Image (tube, rainbow, N blue to C red; front, side, top):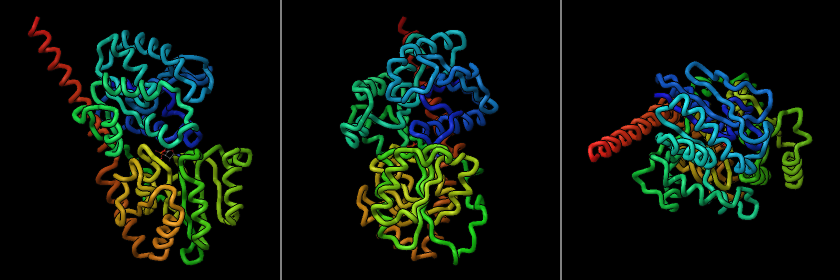
Length: 409
Ligand code: UDP
């Protein structure tokens, strides 16, 4: 198939780890790569956010990234991008008129808006992955939610006009149902992990086990909803253990970052300043070796649409202590690949981690179960296969519909 992926703010070519570049960038790039591996040709359309970007860049064999000029060719926060989506849609229409894709796959609500406008003109099938939902964000962030007020209404409309919605976890199915999306129009396909890259043998030499301080790792964008505050507060109740926080700005800018400064102040306030380590953003090729230095991953957001970081840690053989929210309800099997705790419950989190760290044998078993679970369910080829299944089903439905229309003429 000729697949057009639309990912307005999240380019697979971006450096991941900053405020607006995370899971979606990784997801779009890796899914496109894996689909190309199955013989499809993919073009990813993303907004040009610098004036010096080439119009087209080869991402890997079979995948091109196309930069679309819509609004100023400069960094714009994703919550400010909506006014530029009409221009984005017009550009997509022009391109697809010249070279018609078989199917459009939009990522995030604004891509869905632009993609459905452009695809509507040309009568192309559209599959939508939201990655995050405005209703969930509003519930948790209330007044701190900087999304445009029209987001929730637009999401509902997009969900109703596209051919199929891909939810990345069962919790998202529940949320989509609340928006009135019929279950039959939702497929569940999770995010994946590159197991060639993330595996237990990626460990650099972490030093002798006996002399090393136990290490917890938190990996992700440094935004409040990731619950890093809770991880730091829990550390105060877990003696002799360090917490390595991976993500945020590039390491050379770490000392000037307001969120890092705020979190450092929290660490000092709770008496663990010396046991909390901020690495800043770590490039993807270095990540597996860093993850392998940890004894467990802490993934304790207030809410989480999916959470690729826990999967990456699991692939490296790290048990995950996670809040029982969103995608982690599917990925983390309580008591088998890690432990699930209530969001915001600092004492419960500390107790779970303490229990895990004193039991080496339990951690070893969990590590094995983590690697096995990821290999069985979450490799990118498996995820791409399931996505392809959705694409084929959508194209077949369209064909049947066209035949019915033709026969009735
Ligand atoms: N990430 C990274 N380097 C960093 C911090 C994060 O490569 O310094 C990656 C992380 O490995 C994961 C992604 O950013 O692949 C975060 O995705 P996740 O789904 O966990 O969270 P989201 O960003 O979607 O909220």
